[in-house]
Length: 260
Image: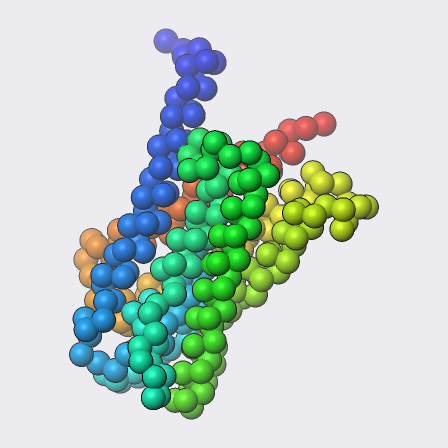
């Protein structure tokens, strides 16, 4: 028996609500998982500097495993700087903030649905800036540590993809200023600016997710997380990426494509 259009609509919205809620839980759960996994005192080897993790959640780690004292770390718990204390990892926060910044606009699963569109845009902007700050701080720590060890920069595909994601995130935040203050770009229709910004943001999110997945193949991560847990960890950025892709496609890309 065929379902009515109204029933199909209810089922579709319920599925999107469930997937959005799952994305919230996964983003937070993955952050907690990494924080526990890489907690201070959990390793007996020399700590390496933090990388950038996104999801997207987005991401830089430039270390290669060459010895027991030099391991490739995706989401190391801290950065070691000569003469300084350990620096807490910024990568889980970056991944979480980027995911939540995009889910702010989800019509079914946003935690800020009670706010106006303008209010949610402001919250989105704040979360994006915080995420970019985490990325830049993490990048600075990696560069500093690399210089101290005399190691080459951008030695892995994970590092290259992570750097590209960080640069893309910076450009994306700059482009968002035009949406906050559309009078700065009077010759550009606001609808087109939103479409370009959303599409560009999706590309940046996927770049970060790709870098994160490459980092999960590092020596440290594969040695620390094994068996089914590793596959579950890999599914985290995959799930959030699918949710974000569906959200952007339904809000902008698909709607624009079917319009005459």
